[in-house]
Image (cartoon, rainbow, N blue to C red; front, side, top):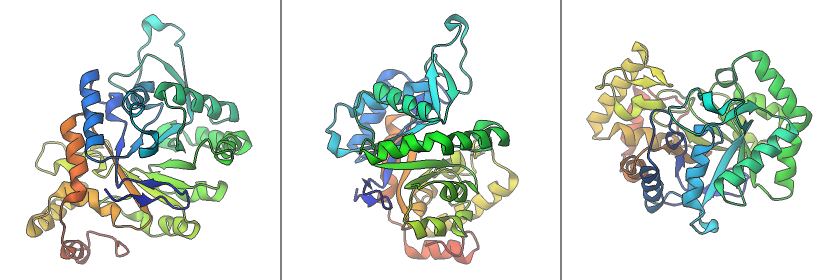
Length: 336
């Protein structure tokens, strides 16, 4: 895989990245041997960018990524993880029941975007990974959907501005990390961060897929002006762009897809069929056509999924396929 530059960061990423959500056991428990096979297959397939988070499985994803990566030459891969939560022993370990994750580790999290919280999160990640350097730290999903309310989002932004950002800048200044990023799930997040902070890149999860390109209007141009790089997560829009519409109850943005989304996907599928292009390959390659995008990150819960994700960039897609999507009104006019 030919590596691509991530904005002004100086980092180069493999175009296919591996995300850590599935190995954090979001849907079901995954045995250790299967997790290791998945990671080894991603590596053998040429993946050299790995993105995880303390939140994924409450630390389990980092442990699993580290178990594979610390056996590899450190100069050969790039790893990112996230800040915004620290993890602690539950008050009553015998009755602890973790929310959200089907499995994961038995630790309780606290949101913390202060200087001390950022530094503690960073140190905890180093220990879980078992790797003494992390290339990139991301401010994790600071939006209402993740935090719970606009008041809490505002409070966490205040903590970042008062002290948390200083922690990230200190780590970057002294070379402990090479870039600072922020996770993006909803429109409006990118301008908010650019207004407040000297961000190096964004990891954009949902607003840039075959089904949604609103970021091309104003948000990506703002990034281009500042040479801010983009990594795209969730290229399959959490399900429907991988499964298509033939399955019962396809998912979009982690909930059952609406009739409007299903209908749009069917129209995209018709163009795919007319040009002999697999929907999954089109979904993966579309974000990579934009010059700001350095890598597309997708999770895998099995060795088969890891190999299939990596294979999508090798599928040949003719230019007239993209033109057909545009002329049908299925792609934003500014799509590259």
